[in-house]
Length: 77
Length: 158
Image 1 (cartoon, rainbow over the protein chains, first blue to last red):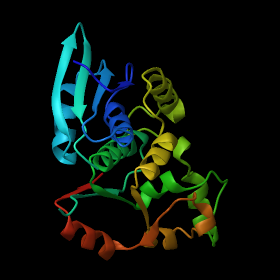
Image 2: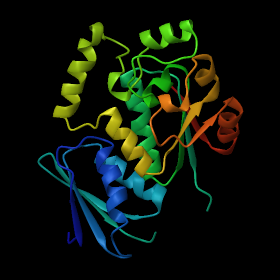
Image 3: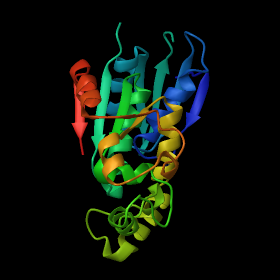
Image 4: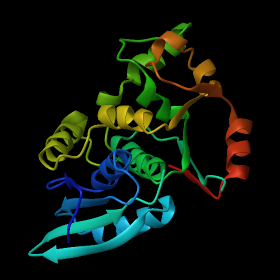
């Protein structure tokens, strides 16, 4: 998956990846994709829930050996 | 679309409970919810400055001397052990990169969380505004909270 911006949240526990995502997404342009790297399993359900609440597009989460890459496409402000 | 609201009464001044309150409040705010934290009773300790004591009469001064304020000085609801519990918890939190309560206050403010201090506790404990940290959005009573609760679907108490 290709992303425009990457956000490293390795080692951070809930809710920090979500809070950092909310801060980071503001810097993206509409249509750009944000990749969030995390080793907190909670991100698998937290990221789609955050996207649903904020109206951003949840693309998916890739999991590889306890590492998660969540992808979010910015829809608007 | 009108924003969802999240309100939480922080009655407890226990570090673990306050941490849970801040986790939910910052998460709610980052999800675009209009978020308010209403601090009352022991919860006011979170917003107090570190001071030896405060209050207007001798009883208030004694009480506020025993009930020390300051976000970094909160005790644990379990295993407090004269402060050893919180000290160990802070080390564990640091190791896991979990923000401290002071850091959570800053994060919450940055996300637009409203910090509200209860005027009743404020008055009977003999506090003055100078006893509190900067960044408190308002001083208000129970009706304010109930008004907020009526407007929002999610209102918690801890």
